[in-house]
Amino acid sequence: MKITEILMAEHVVFHNLFDHIEKTLPQLKTLAEVKSLAATLDALMRPHACTEDDLLMGPLEHCLEQIGQSETFHEEHEEIDDRLAEVQKARGPKQARDLLLRAVLRSREHFDKEERILFPLAERLLKAKTLSSLGDEWMKRREAALK
Image 1 (spheres, one colour):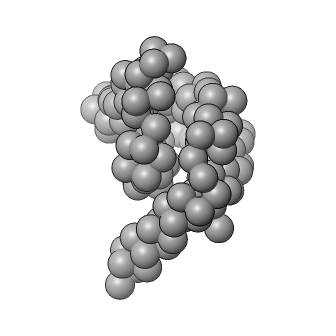
Image 2 (cartoon, rainbow, N blue to C red):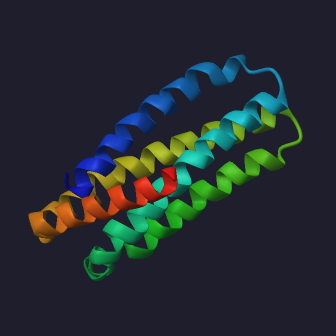
Protein backbone atom coordinates (compact mmCIF):
# COMPACT_ATOMS: atom_id res chain seq x y z
CA MET A 1 0.00 0.00 0.00
CA LYS A 2 1.28 3.48 -0.84
CA ILE A 3 2.13 5.89 1.98
CA THR A 4 -0.34 8.40 0.55
CA GLU A 5 -3.15 5.84 0.80
CA ILE A 6 -2.18 5.02 4.37
CA LEU A 7 -2.08 8.66 5.43
CA MET A 8 -5.41 9.38 3.71
CA ALA A 9 -6.95 6.42 5.56
CA GLU A 10 -5.63 7.84 8.82
CA HIS A 11 -7.14 11.21 7.90
CA VAL A 12 -10.55 9.57 7.51
CA VAL A 13 -10.24 8.17 11.03
CA PHE A 14 -9.15 11.57 12.36
CA HIS A 15 -12.06 13.33 10.67
CA ASN A 16 -14.41 10.92 12.45
CA LEU A 17 -12.64 11.64 15.74
CA PHE A 18 -12.88 15.39 15.10
CA ASP A 19 -16.63 14.98 14.47
CA HIS A 20 -16.96 13.08 17.75
CA ILE A 21 -15.02 15.72 19.68
CA GLU A 22 -17.08 18.56 18.22
CA LYS A 23 -20.29 16.72 19.04
CA THR A 24 -19.43 15.71 22.61
CA LEU A 25 -17.29 18.66 23.71
CA PRO A 26 -20.20 20.96 24.63
CA GLN A 27 -21.56 18.31 27.01
CA LEU A 28 -18.31 17.77 28.90
CA LYS A 29 -18.61 19.40 32.33
CA THR A 30 -15.30 18.76 34.03
CA LEU A 31 -11.80 19.92 33.24
CA ALA A 32 -10.55 16.35 33.60
CA GLU A 33 -12.94 15.12 30.89
CA VAL A 34 -11.76 17.74 28.42
CA LYS A 35 -8.09 17.17 29.24
CA SER A 36 -8.54 13.42 28.82
CA LEU A 37 -10.11 13.86 25.40
CA ALA A 38 -7.32 16.26 24.37
CA ALA A 39 -4.67 13.83 25.62
CA THR A 40 -6.23 11.05 23.53
CA LEU A 41 -6.19 13.22 20.42
CA ASP A 42 -2.60 14.25 21.12
CA ALA A 43 -1.50 10.63 21.57
CA LEU A 44 -2.92 9.81 18.14
CA MET A 45 -1.81 12.96 16.33
CA ARG A 46 1.87 12.89 17.31
CA PRO A 47 2.77 9.59 15.61
CA HIS A 48 0.74 10.62 12.56
CA ALA A 49 2.61 13.93 12.28
CA CYS A 50 5.97 12.19 12.76
CA THR A 51 5.10 9.74 9.99
CA GLU A 52 4.20 12.58 7.64
CA ASP A 53 7.38 14.48 8.52
CA ASP A 54 9.69 11.48 8.16
CA LEU A 55 8.17 9.46 5.36
CA LEU A 56 6.44 11.98 3.13
CA MET A 57 7.67 15.50 3.74
CA GLY A 58 11.28 14.37 3.96
CA PRO A 59 11.44 13.06 0.38
CA LEU A 60 9.47 16.10 -0.84
CA GLU A 61 11.33 18.75 1.18
CA HIS A 62 13.06 20.32 -1.81
CA CYS A 63 9.76 20.57 -3.72
CA LEU A 64 7.91 22.00 -0.74
CA GLU A 65 10.65 24.62 -0.37
CA GLN A 66 10.26 25.63 -4.00
CA ILE A 67 6.54 26.30 -3.56
CA GLY A 68 7.09 28.03 -0.20
CA GLN A 69 5.32 25.38 1.87
CA SER A 70 8.10 23.52 3.66
CA GLU A 71 8.17 25.63 6.81
CA THR A 72 4.40 26.02 6.75
CA PHE A 73 3.68 22.30 7.05
CA HIS A 74 6.20 21.84 9.85
CA GLU A 75 4.97 24.93 11.68
CA GLU A 76 1.37 23.74 11.44
CA HIS A 77 2.31 20.41 13.04
CA GLU A 78 4.01 22.30 15.88
CA GLU A 79 1.06 24.67 16.23
CA ILE A 80 -1.38 21.77 16.60
CA ASP A 81 0.92 20.15 19.19
CA ASP A 82 1.12 23.46 21.07
CA ARG A 83 -2.64 23.94 21.06
CA LEU A 84 -3.19 20.47 22.46
CA ALA A 85 -0.55 21.15 25.14
CA GLU A 86 -2.38 24.37 26.06
CA VAL A 87 -5.49 22.32 26.87
CA GLN A 88 -3.49 20.49 29.54
CA LYS A 89 -2.56 23.85 31.13
CA ALA A 90 -6.14 25.16 31.16
CA ARG A 91 -7.54 26.18 34.54
CA GLY A 92 -11.21 25.64 33.82
CA PRO A 93 -13.47 23.48 31.63
CA LYS A 94 -14.68 26.36 29.43
CA GLN A 95 -11.14 27.45 28.62
CA ALA A 96 -10.13 23.84 27.96
CA ARG A 97 -13.13 23.25 25.68
CA ASP A 98 -12.34 26.42 23.70
CA LEU A 99 -8.69 25.44 23.32
CA LEU A 100 -9.52 21.89 22.25
CA LEU A 101 -12.05 23.12 19.71
CA ARG A 102 -9.43 25.50 18.29
CA ALA A 103 -6.97 22.60 18.01
CA VAL A 104 -9.54 20.49 16.17
CA LEU A 105 -10.41 23.30 13.78
CA ARG A 106 -6.73 23.95 13.07
CA SER A 107 -6.18 20.23 12.51
CA ARG A 108 -9.03 20.13 9.99
CA GLU A 109 -7.53 23.09 8.11
CA HIS A 110 -4.11 21.44 8.11
CA PHE A 111 -5.46 18.09 6.93
CA ASP A 112 -7.33 19.85 4.13
CA LYS A 113 -4.09 21.47 2.98
CA GLU A 114 -2.26 18.14 3.06
CA GLU A 115 -5.03 16.49 1.05
CA ARG A 116 -5.04 19.31 -1.53
CA ILE A 117 -1.29 19.96 -1.80
CA LEU A 118 0.99 17.40 -0.14
CA PHE A 119 -0.60 14.10 -1.14
CA PRO A 120 -1.19 15.04 -4.81
CA LEU A 121 2.37 16.40 -4.99
CA ALA A 122 3.71 13.09 -3.69
CA GLU A 123 1.61 11.16 -6.20
CA ARG A 124 2.91 13.32 -9.06
CA LEU A 125 6.59 13.46 -8.12
CA LEU A 126 7.39 10.16 -6.43
CA LYS A 127 7.35 6.86 -8.25
CA ALA A 128 4.69 4.32 -7.29
CA LYS A 129 7.47 2.00 -6.13
CA THR A 130 8.82 4.71 -3.82
CA LEU A 131 5.36 5.41 -2.41
CA SER A 132 4.91 1.68 -1.79
CA SER A 133 8.34 1.40 -0.15
CA LEU A 134 7.42 4.28 2.15
CA GLY A 135 4.17 2.45 2.93
CA ASP A 136 6.20 -0.65 3.80
CA GLU A 137 8.35 1.46 6.13
CA TRP A 138 5.17 2.74 7.82
CA MET A 139 4.10 -0.89 8.34
CA LYS A 140 7.46 -1.79 9.89
CA ARG A 141 7.21 1.15 12.27
CA ARG A 142 3.64 0.24 13.12
CA GLU A 143 4.59 -3.37 13.89
CA ALA A 144 7.54 -2.23 16.03
CA ALA A 145 5.28 0.12 17.99
CA LEU A 146 2.87 -2.70 18.76
CA LYS A 147 5.59 -4.90 20.28
